[in-house]
Image 1: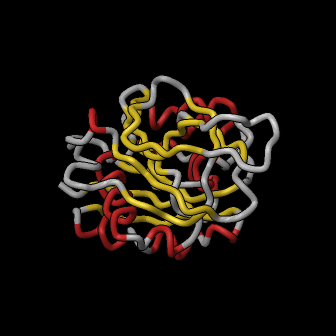
Image 2 (image 1 turned 120 degrees about the vertical axis):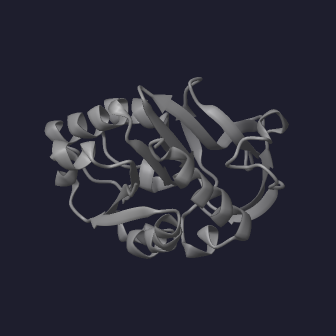
Length: 219
């Protein structure tokens, strides 16, 4: 039975939404998804389309959801449509509290310059199919400070180390990769993915594709 994935991309072009999502469309197709691409948020108000969608992959930084769009997206995820994405395309999308409650995080800030930092797989979750067999790794990119909640199943973390004084005086552990359930739907998020160099890092690419596939509605 063919499963259906909807790739919703747009918003701020600095996160190269077309090119970034294009990295993963072949993997979705190889896994048996029929992929539809949308560059308009009105797809979230199409109840029939979303009911037939097993996975939404979103890369949309900024923007605004209308009430109908927000309600349609949340209703679909609650009913079992998976939702997945990375970086600002998820946690820096929209000014919508209900949406951010669903995805489990909200972007606050990042240092002015790219940093080299370590990402550690949580040993207690090392057997999760998204990260199984993967080692911790180092990236040089934006390091996100986010607000998150305890419904998240955190698979990988980093540590934000303060520099230059100010009120942020001690290292802060921060989730990098998480999953969660929202109603019957699965949600996957990775904080890494500012540009194509991030997403083509071998470990990042592997865990991101695994996360997209994991989030898809179970057959």
